[in-house]
Length: 263
View 1 (cartoon, rainbow, N blue to C red):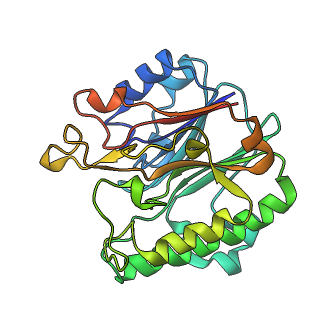
View 2: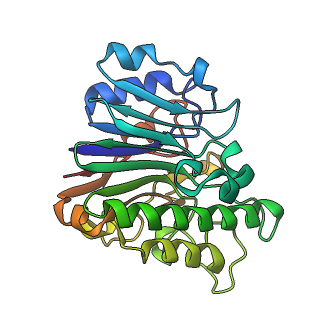
């Protein structure tokens, strides 16, 4: 099985790129983030005509996630509420950032973690609160489905200093590299999840996102913020995890590029 994650930064803008990539890379599951479209306007037809099933959770102009799969999913849910309850989640599910389903024996989750805005802004604290909800959500799911769980997506956090092109200060106030964000991510991973990419590649300079500005892609000024995290038994089954740079070379690409894990 092959599972890919890709922040497409608007599926309607990037539709041809994504459909052509799927034709050349027929993965079993493609998790998308930042689809930026309501469910009724998601461009399903090109995927369905190519033999894929489409599951979406979107909103107008912002956020949005989707799962594109070669075989039908079961137990598809969106947001935190189906597991944590509406009282616990409150208004956090108003932003469409999480979708999950089951394929074979693997529970697949796609997430778009909030960017966080400026350090210690309202958006920054929203991100930390959202990550706390994600921790509680995964704690429950891992207790139920530890044998096969894959959570993938744009986490908007670099786990380690080697995952970003600049030197990170111990007291960094640059969102995505701050201590509080990294600590929140580590608490999630300590539930029993491991970074699929780092199982196979320990090199520096391995990035998944590059700012459109300042010629960042050609200058290798990137961040590794798109991840596959696997439960331990599933991690043992992983045979490969790669970053596919090819789509980032195309005209009008997403600022992110796909990451693929194979089992």
